[in-house]
Length: 112
Image (tube, rainbow, N blue to C red; front, side, top):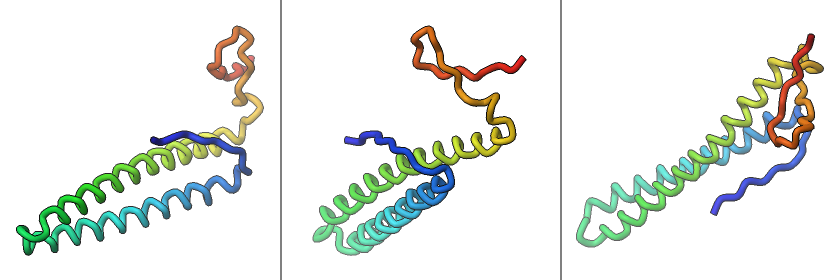
């Protein structure tokens, strides 16, 4: 089961955190690659090794799915950071305004 957590950090630390996510993804992809190489090697003796090969392919596939989910999150964080950087010149007009109607959707102030 995957859960989403959130915490506060300095905006300047965000690129390093995204880098950690990407590095972890690279490590997991390397492990998946090694599993697939073992699976391929096991096919040299299919009668003896087919179950090992099947298990290795399954583990690699699951690892790649996990990597995909992590990279989606990293990309989302990077997109949000890019939006922050682009809006930094006009921050006072881009801050979310409080919605007094009870909606949980943030609204952007519209300068007159």
